[in-house]
Length: 526
Image (cartoon, rainbow, N blue to C red; front, top):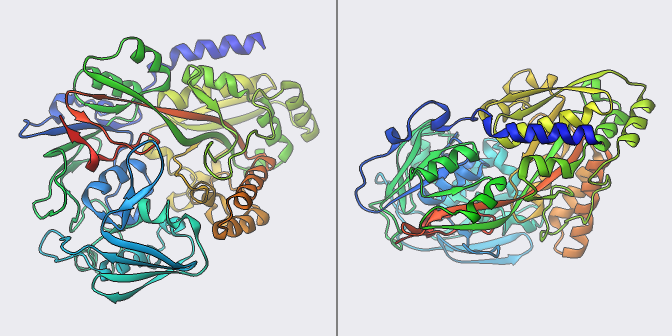
């Protein structure tokens, strides 16, 4: 055990030297070239990912949602603050008529840019139904959605096949962006994905410019008639690595950013001038995944050996300086279905791990682990590499940029999924368990279910839980589902993190979701 602790500690010292996974710094572009001459009040913020689409019907990335919340309208949106909740946006009124019908009445006078007229119930129907017509992955967030019935220009009814509790905390406030039917049909001919070229906007801002790996520029929407937003421009710079973002903040190139958990103590002890540091509880989860279809990992005893060989507290110390909690599953504390503890103890047990390998009749095993090449993921992979060496498993680390990594398990992206073995995986979660758990049904194998976890019972429970409105019964079902995931040997849950953010108090009053993600339309200039 002393040997592994020494190895882990040495790797922890190396993590700040990891190459960046993307963004303008990784491209070798000086930040000064991405800064425009300021005219009016400007918000300069950091994104944790490069934008891949501005079509709200085909995205699930939080950083893209940060932008889309500025340029499109939804019936309802998340409220800023420390408690999860939603409030009306484009809807003047919305009510649950019965378990499968939700009636909404729109505010009048919300305009689309480009002369595409007023936002109506027809646009709501088109926006929600196109997700299913074009088989978008976003459809999982809509559960049992069937269609929208139009009653008049401003009134409609959302019709569900079966009750879907998560519609209130996932579908409407996170996924329910409304686009112009006329504009999208003109741009795409079939109403499909318009990618990086939105044909019309309806929010307080419009997309003025975007350059991949460099910046996203938002400016005020001249057709906006709602409450005036706090800034004239929002400039979002994609800086994937937390350490690079911290340097950019210190240099004054950005005024709002997430920082690394292992930098929190330093920032608190010596905070940048005119800055405020806040620590938000994250809903996100990390784990080491194992592809159960790979020939080397088909035996559940091999997967269980890996589970028991991984010491989670050592990972937390190495990658997060202890500023993260042990994860017990995909569902965070405070969310329905949270488990108090995992089936495998956090510290694991090397001797138990060796017994599972003996049961499998395996020795001198060589495996690979795929990860994003940022400092956190690389440190996690290096730590697991050291831990597995204690039971005779040699682990090769395949680190790659985020754009490459986030397609490795997708069958639509080629043949790489066949070679996936171990994965340093993560999930950016939302406040209803249906969101976290829906990605691991059998229908998601080869899409987001990269472990290729397959359980008929899990699928049955997922369908049952989505329709349950009893929190106690629902919690039990989601706990059982997490047990099934862990019993498969495909998952070794590792960290539940915090989201530290820093922002310049001389520039803004920041507004975020409870998990620290920015709600830019609610920011106020100072």
